[in-house]
Length: 372
Image 1 (spheres, rainbow, N blue to C red):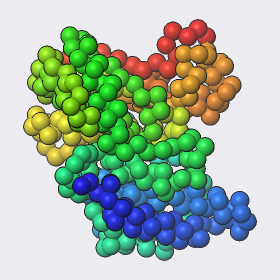
Image 2 (image 1 turned 90 degrees about the vertical axis):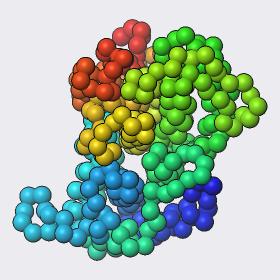
Image 3 (image 1 turned 135 degrees about the vertical axis):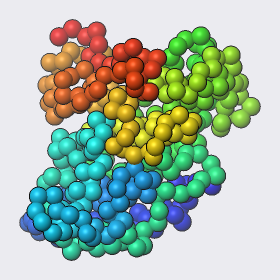
């Protein structure tokens, strides 16, 4: 059993988060019209959802504990004394953005609703008190994949908490066992056919919060480190064998270089980037070659998953100008792809474990080969 499949675990969590969303929404100033109500709900959902990511990160010791301490005794950043609850929560959220791949979670162009209003201190404190005293831990043991460090639950929560905002993007989460079945039927035959290739390149054109990317990373880790890949859900299906077995230190950059994703919703893509970054670092720690605790601020800065923000239906079909006229809000989005100067990317060096085997990062060009 995995808690993400257990309704007795997930449903009470979602209901509690919805209650806090309603409470935060009621505390946000604005006209008490239908449109005003919808706006406040979106703002509140953005705050509550990011608090869930903070809770997940704290439960896995990826960042310092502040939310689970009830936001108490959090020093104000620019003044003496203790920060107000709403400021303290914002500071806790800021702890998630310390890595180049995760810096977009609070960016106004990615998480617009978060910046459109501020809930009251009382409502935020109640949310923090619930996380500190009553909420279940988001770091849990599993008897079936995927582990909680994969962020599977926070990926699912984006749809359930902020559903109103994501309806237009048709965000629908794929259960992990379906991901595995699809990979059994696609990735395993690819590994068998291209066993002599240095990289098994994959792409998810509708990546969502990264469910398929996470499972593909897990599969490819097994393939690169053992040279064998057996089906996990399509029981009895053919396995891939005869691959070149390499040590985990060299396998990690190959895993990251092998997985690409495209997602049209900026915040959804930002969540996928966070999850893939953490999971790649987790694989290194699990193999025993990464030293020290697994924290966002110690993950190598050049360990960056390639999850572009774009309309994958148009990529390879139109030039930049046509694309910009169709999606003006995405055309100039900072960090939308991995080719612009706005992407805070530290190039690999010989001293960086994540850079071994890759002389230069293979960038994801959203318009590769398309004339201007």
